[in-house]
Length: 384
Image (tube, rainbow, N blue to C red; front, side):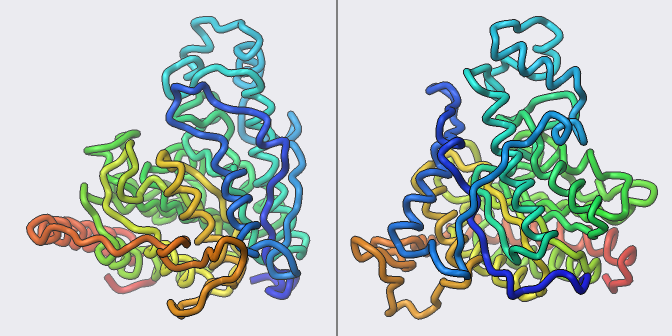
């Protein structure tokens, strides 16, 4: 880790009213309101304020910043589409489809959301923050010239490119239930960005990619790690996969900054996915990531049960800013007696999985872990 990065810089939550001015169409599963609701919840619980949990406004990403990854022709198509000019070429770029609908201000919203993640990247690179969370970010399906999966501008790729420009080595850990296909595509042949994705298998879920054998090419061989998970994956099995196949690679790669995509659509009850996780497992993963003593740039992502997503992100923020307590008898304070335990708080109740399903899930996850360790571990000097 470069000497200029210091853990004394604290945690920053990036948000502003500009991000609440826009919304996807009412019939679209994606809700842009989640970030504002998360901000309200953490503020009501006393999780904002002080050097360890500061709030900062974003800067809107400029056209030139967006063009560090996206093609000018594609960005022009977004602007034309929101002005009512939606032609066949734009449709081929993914615009105007059910999962990437056209809506007023779509370009501005994407630029603000991307700018919030860029703001976080610069706060870390400028030694003004050790941890940053932008719940409005995490658009990991946006390709250079194609929208996909509710994503128009890829803030993760653009932030990673900014950090690379600052001379920093990057790891992306994506725990969204959907594979981060566009992020993988952007860095598949590069060795200076490690991309790790834990997601429901493409055999049962969009975008149909992210299998173990997708492990990078050329200089990037071994710098893509995919953990496809079976339907019904539960907390203990998920964390087993993380500890056995992900954490060792993250530590061996030793990045300067970890970008953490915290999609909450892997939670049980999400209408667009089929996993059986509670938000408790993300506490375990974030704590392990923080133990690596690397700066963390966290973003939002998917999450289509709004209430569960907001509660999950608020819980994640409490861990990221160091105000989470394992003592279940001690509340966090704040208004309305909210705390980080389930009763009126943030943690989910433990879910009991069907024993027969657990056996199948365990068997599939052990096989995935074994294949990843055999394929990727030797490329990082690790024993399979």
